[in-house]
Image 1: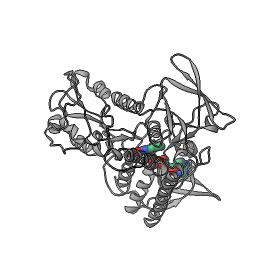
Image 2: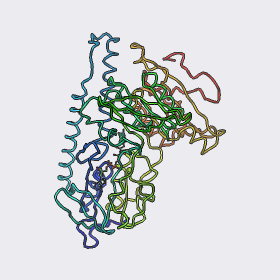
Image 3: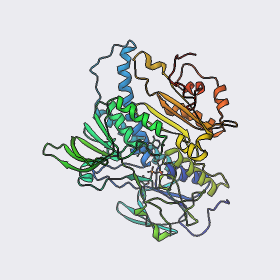
Image 4: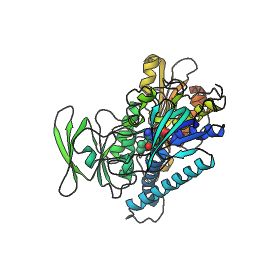
Length: 492
Ligand code: FAD
């Protein structure tokens, strides 16, 4: 694709709407290749009034604060384990929510500041305004004190999404979402986490680790879209740590009691039984909605599909000079590195003569629950659906992390599996890992899988001992064999 800057009489070659992971990477890459670029970013406050700076979901209310709080919870666990390793630890240690929130928010603010400086240095014009289309080459940016009309040759829509609220009494007035949690000005206390997607489970996990009392309410299944055997092991590991799961249950209403606590009525969808409980916090984690409403996409002729935008394999919408990347696009993984790479590759195709397209297949991901789960490639059920059960071999095994022995941590749910082609070269289709530092473990295997990893190669790979990642190289038991996948020893 030939570079397109300089054509037509527009204010900019490119306007990016949305200054999050995808938008920023696209804007910066486009400028690096000579385009004149503006990037709009605007955050509408939550019903509670929470708002944040430039950088999008990941930095402000997503991956980063989530990982920091997960780390805080893991550290608490590690301090208690330290006693077993011979450290003299005061067993009365407890976390301070307000100090944690301050530390997390200070980090976020520093990232916001660095982001703005970076945009200025790279000559991307940052506009703190809410963008909406006037026509397919013009947007209007609603600024704090007015409005500005901007024209551009090309647009990239990277507006991401925000958490949904259920349509029940009291949901918006009394409930919060992940958009509020990481800056909450009081301890969450006993928390009802409604939703068992990865965000709900991660929040419940770190809240428990920080000493609070989360309960997870699940309407149907846990971790929809993930391998369901692994998903159920994740949930079981959380239950073992004392996090209750209310299954097949939906909330009916939230009321504020005179003592300020929240009375939640809920219904079991199988029995119809209605019950209630009192919580300090209700956290909605029931999914996210694409932010298409403010964009006035009709004015530009861009079509939407279920609050998202459908794009082709080059991230082009139905309007040829309007593109979309990141969480706003329909049917692709909603992950920061996906948005970042898609944005960067798009800018290179637009302004640097590149033809490289984003590959959305075999994207690795991690669920940062107390016992972490990471995977890459196909789930067992998807592999069976795609190739048929007779063509799939699943290698699996439980294992015992060395570092769990001395503090006598439960190894019950430490488990790995490889989903592979049964015959022929035995190509590995999916790798699944439940255990410590899951993201670090699976990242390298993701490169191997994308390079055509086979079971013989995996088994001929010499492990690093003693690590948990080496468990993938020790896999020898197939599900089909019916042999016991629990380990006999750690070192043979
Ligand atoms: P965003 O980062 O959401 O950026 C869009 C920006 O556009 C926002 O600032 C928005 O306010 C702004 N905007 C919207 N409409 C307009 C408009 N009309 N005009 C101007 N600006 C507008 N991903 C991972 O890879 N790993 C993780 O561990 C992880 N953890 C997560 C944890 C949580 C709690 C959440 C909520 C998400 C997590 N994600 C994680 C997902 C990740 O944050 C998103 O995939 C990523 O931020 C998407 O980037 P984006 O550029 O598409 O959108």
